[in-house]
Length: 456
Image (cartoon, rainbow, N blue to C red; front, side, top):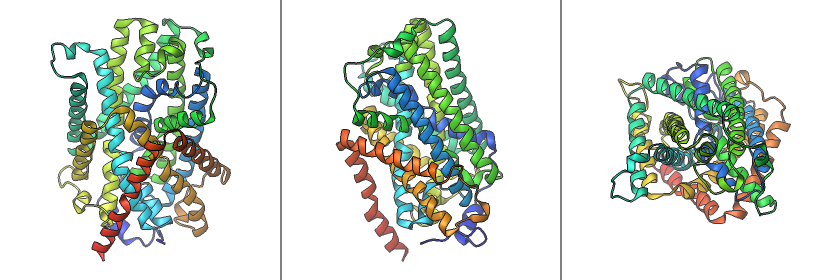
């Protein structure tokens, strides 16, 4: 096992020397919010309607998902302050368990944790943008899906170039887009309640299917995908000013803000549209906006949401490359990923690699295929990291810098039990996608063996 002594950490010291602590609480919280509020909340409620019988059950899913995410954030605040360097779960798992688990979480993050969500955010952007501006398609002779894929790939490349050119521009764009996202959600809720058409009877409308615990678990996996990102600021812990204070606060604030935003937005959606209208729809906010305000307003709302989705895409492009940078410093990833650009002071090659992989996923995959695959995969390593909190305490890893988890041991036990039940339910309901997710992780094992052999 690997120890983590803040007073004697040669490799971590070298790594930390290449990064600067320059990010404050506003940017850290914005990254947490931006990572969570994105493709999931704007697209999954309609898909969840095929798994649970009524809007009230969907709201129960969102409330429970928020509680699970908050419990995870509480646990990660301790893990991150025990090991306050760039890399997130990669650092925690290699330190607490074994370098092989650290490698596998980085390997999985490369495909599932960041590349796939970037692709999903780009897909969501193109879907909502075409709803808002259908004139874009006017006169085109190309298939609709091809045009949407080209737009999604283009927006990924644009933001890759933004984050390639340095911290200042990237942080400013991130904060601005996060503000647009929050204002648009709150504005929709207020406008919907004051001038929009709707009915509270919509909340009691029901679908034909009865309640099914397996279906409920699958819906919860979709919710947890929407909440994924509650641990976002831990990945940039080494770049935060005063991480012992900034990091836990950003996790708490970000998660609570998102819980409120999710409940507010779902309240607007189910107040404005019937359950049957929403069932199976990806652009649920557009459907609700048509019913509440009419076609012209719905087009405006769709355009605003397309911009809001760019906030998530941008945040993933900030965080993902930092994980690969940390792995490369340990010689567990391509060496070029650790290099910091001499002028822009960011891991620019990692940023570029992340963008290329995300564009490839847009080219070969579809929204529905990626969604279930991502939802299942993202539950595995946070589960291991929270389980490792018990070991970290026993071994006193980073004891003098730790901010202890409120409600320990009940909060981590709650997170572990609920997350495990959700993964089991999803495997039973969607076995093919779940097996593909497990296979992706297992595929990293021979690569780890080869890398270790090369190092030796």
